[in-house]
Image 1 (cartoon, rainbow, N blue to C red):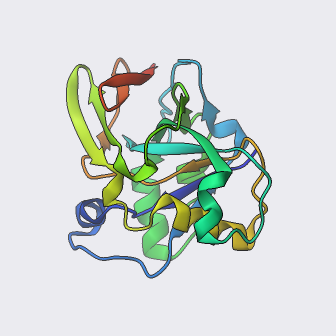
Image 2: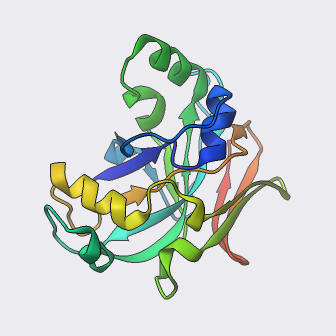
Length: 203
């Protein structure tokens, strides 16, 4: 099982990170280790030696069949379910890595940094979903999947040029603006439309 993720896939998120709006020429892809995955409402233990840890809520899709070099027009056949995920990020470590041109492997892929909620069958257009994240009962992030700079089918087609996609692989599709820090005791809840699909207690 592979965990793929897309960075800087919402325009306003690029602005909150760098102070300017820009669109990457190609999807910004990174991966997370399989030990990053947390599910079934398991708690997230906030690392005490990695500096500030930020939540990033995003739409996650589940790959449902084997595929390589997938044409974009057929990409919708390769995923069958959707949920909300949290891409936890060691923000200070990431900022240092970006300045020095280093990989994001540790700041993005550490143990427990990829949380997923309950899977929902994909019945609507993947690019027509509203989602939001609540922190301690207050909404801190809101997103619309139609605002993605690179759409899900584009990303899958692009990824499959370089990686063989397999059943059970996960794709985190990028976060909208509103990211922020977590602390011990925080409760994070993720929603697709009005349905709560993710709950995570920070310890």
